[in-house]
Length: 108
Image (tube, rainbow, N blue to C red; front, top):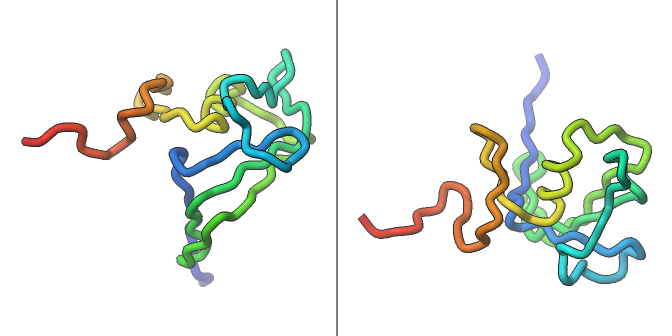
């Protein structure tokens, strides 16, 4: 049997890059990486502050989403690229940047 490895990144640590790949998208809300049919306009790049790959922490890693791929949930994918928190119980998009998933937001 083979080994099983997991890779993961947190949405709050994703930084969308501009179409020319030279700058961070600022403001990120103005970026439109998807066309009207929900497909990528160009190869989208995001910089991950911290990324875990095969149990090794990598910092400032750039990952690519290929233009030729299929985007099955365009609205959710676009909001993930822009750094919004997605509640996976009902796929609602949290636009409040002061609350992050699984992080306490009050004292008990």
